[in-house]
Length: 203
Image (cartoon, rainbow, N blue to C red; front, side, top):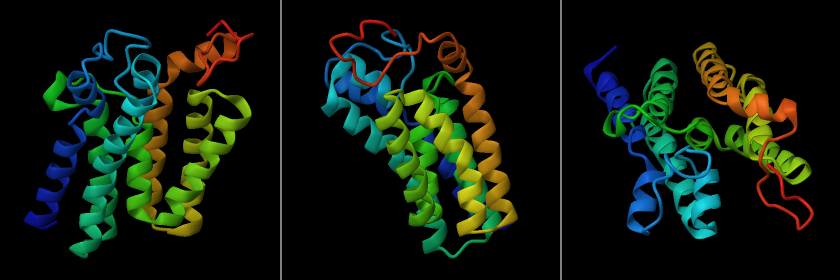
């Protein structure tokens, strides 16, 4: 592995460590997402505490920090191993950000950015699955769990690199682990919904 490869991986972790949710909430005068709502610094929680505009900016920021390091791998013509490690590093940066006390989000948007960086068809397949599940179930965590569980299959079908498939399996397993409290709520029927109907006052 060359020095440039190591620099890309370090850069990926560094940019992944920039918490879009915390920065957006500070700039827009909103409560700290680590202490409000679900206490998760991610786009879904920002939607709950700050509305659609703040959530959209957060989603874009979190996605870009996964996309940009992998896009650089394309520009610099790096190996599949570096593509995989850069994606994992950006994802780990979001989960365990060095700039915010290693307290990060659950990684869905950043993982999606990584997948779009690997290939637009991979990212598109995962995003389409998320949107379908979100429309059907109206539960963000369930949409994330289903789409990311299928992501290794999409990677294998669209870019069958052992390094990328292994990286996506790692990302999926860690993402499921980070959603363990959501899984418990899903099983108990108490998980919050993306948008509430007038008759849905729970969650």
